[in-house]
Each structure stands twice: as C-alpha cells, then as structure tokens.
Image (cartoon, rainbow, N blue to C red):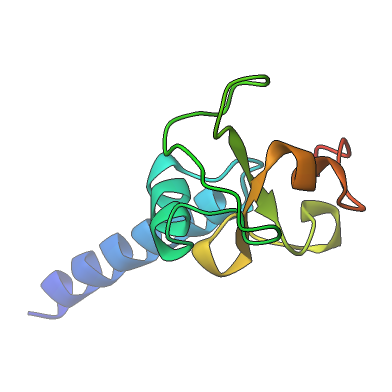
Length: 101
C-alpha cells in the first residue's frame, strides 16, 4: 500500500512540474487563448472591438493578441488570470509591446 501511495505521489508531483513549466513558458496555450477570448465575449478588453477567434494575422479584420498583463520579465505566468485579449492596435499601445517577455 505504501509503495502505491509513493507511486501516486510521484505522478502528482510530475504532473505539477509539467504544468508549472507550461505556465512559465513564453506563450499562452491555445486552450488558454480560447478561454480568454470566450471570457472577453470575443471583444478587445481595452476598446471593445469585435474580434475573430482564430485570427492573429496583421491586417485582417478582427485580429487580436493574447497579452501578458504582468510581463514574463516581471514573473508573469502564461495562465488565464494573466491573459488579456487585445486587438492589434491596443496591443501595440501596451508598455511591454515588442518586449517578447
């Protein structure tokens, strides 16, 4: 029984380490971006412009970026609580635009 508990605990720890590594990664996961977009009702959280879920291409209508509210360089994670949906124009106005934090 003790051996099975140790195996389960190791699996839980390994899973937590993988999740932490994902949260510390530079990019938001596709699931996180989709959740943030849905939470923002498909609109820019700064100006309210209507956005297109899968559109991240400059020059196309409804293009948007998932923005780190707390920059990665300041310890911000790539999780839903730190994700802000912004149209490209509003994203360019952020203090951290172009930092690739």
